Length: 365
Image (cartoon, rainbow, N blue to C red; front, side, top):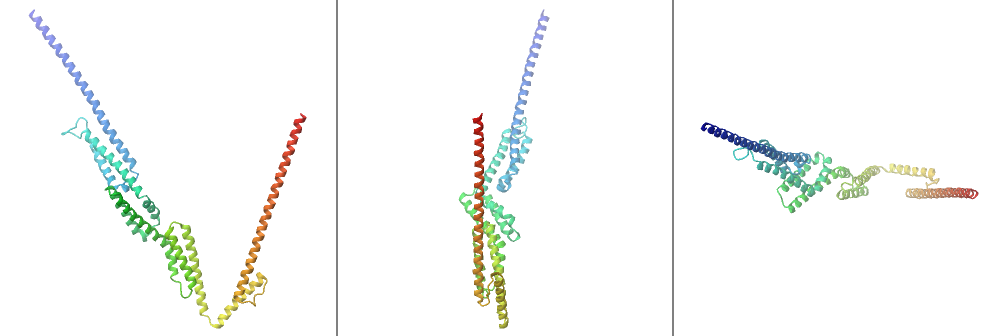
């Protein structure tokens, strides 16, 4: 009996121990499963954060932040590399003082890169706003700058780079405007110099070869043209039509002045007999033209009178031609109106006839 009692006790203890062991194993398994779920969630949160930042970086990469915010962009690139390394080392099961980086430190590093990207965008917006005109002018001028002005252009570009660096250092807005105006002034001076070199300088060089004492009137005419061109350059340096037209007129005046100077020199070097021959030649030419085109004998008139006669007669003939053209135009217009009236009248008659036919048909029916 005692043996049976001991056997029952042993069996009970065995069963109780087995149940406890089973419950403990089930609890550990549940805890492990929960830890696994938690770790996956932590890892996914970190991966989502770094993926978003890297996508933002790739989108910003082609927006020229290295020019508009160079220091900030450099920090973005450096910190993004170190942050990616930190993410690669992150292990939810190995965080803490003696382990790998913690979730909070990794997410903080990612957030810092994101903040720097936002800061780069703000700086670019600030730069493109305050430097809108200088940047547009530089874009316009750069293709026009040759070797002669390359140094000035490089200097301006360096000023712009320094200006951007000052913005990244949070320089006062009032000081930014002063620096911006200095840059704009340099750009304007460069543009004026480029236009002068293209339009004004070649003509000025030819002008200085004219003899003021020999042909003072022609000389002063060219000088006045150069002053007008200089005014166009100062007020409208990009008006290529005005620049080209003014420069073309000056070029023609210079060519005319050169011919006049040659004629004056030629006349001054003639002796008395040659001078008379020249006068006779020009008079004979005008007299021949008078007989041919005016049917008049101009031989008894002075040279000035001959020229005046040509001007008067030609003006009268041109006025007569203009009157005839006007009469022809009026006649053509009148004929057109008559034709239109005839067409309208014909149309009305046809309409009336059609109406009458229709009415008769209705009545008959």
